[in-house]
Image 1 (tube, rainbow, N blue to C red):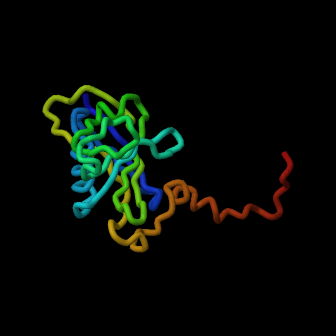
Image 2 (cartoon, rainbow, N blue to C red):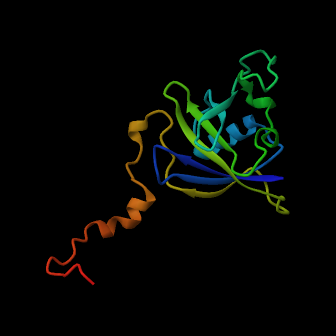
Length: 170
């Protein structure tokens, strides 16, 4: 099975990435793909499963924090390397929070938007759609101040003052 994800950033409302990954890949494989896709340096990162309000649930860490003793259900952080996507994400619209800067808690928000059969001849993981530059890995102040797609699209209407002589009644 192929999982299609949408990834967003709270630092740049224009940033969107859609990508496809084999469901048998681990969260560590997903981490490596994200780092490569965004052209970030390797980093200590974590994934969290999240509920429908983006509240953090189970943590999955880059390094094994409990020496491999966790059972996956005790609330202790689990290693990314042993967590397969198909075991962590079991329903359409399941969510992950990807913390790429643990010191400042900078994150990306990832949602499972489709599960499908692999396409013949296609290599996975693969980037399917990209819009806007990724936030700078180290300095959030270096990020493009681009506003949101909505603001960009509706910007021309913001200058409309109307005709002051017009009658507002129909």
